[in-house]
Image (cartoon, rainbow, N blue to C red; front, side, top):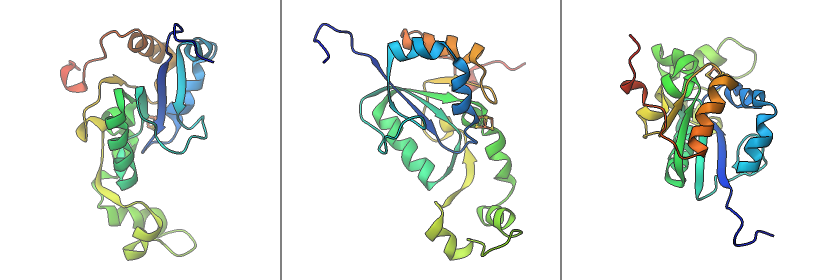
Length: 185
Ligand code: SF4
């Protein structure tokens, strides 16, 4: 039982949107640091848990992937409403990266290219909306849809980058600047 003088753990979530899951898997490369993380945080949602609904009052949510479809969009809106610090985690979330390669095609062309050359009935046209979340016109980095508070780039981000950034956020220090604020020159 939690006693009233015991410090409340930071409520942490990780989410997999339009990405390959590599960023969430790279989280496991933190190795023994995960023990440190588990002592500081309570994991309240993510691919490593069996929790179905995104919870309320989350302190930090680490988001992998871009916004590709209506399902991603709906969940991301919920995450933004319920989270104090949203972290754009990995290049697909930060820039669109691999997920945005499809932006040269229309959503209908993406479905034809994805399903039109394999056996079985392709789920495009009106049928697609019954079996798949509707694709948005393009794949968007998170901050193009709703603001984020921190960026951890990489494909996937390695532990040497992830841990110091995450530790800073856990200790309430300033988040990384947005990509637009950085100099890439
Ligand atoms: S950034 Fe790389 S590892 Fe992460 S979801 Fe995108 S393609 Fe996968």
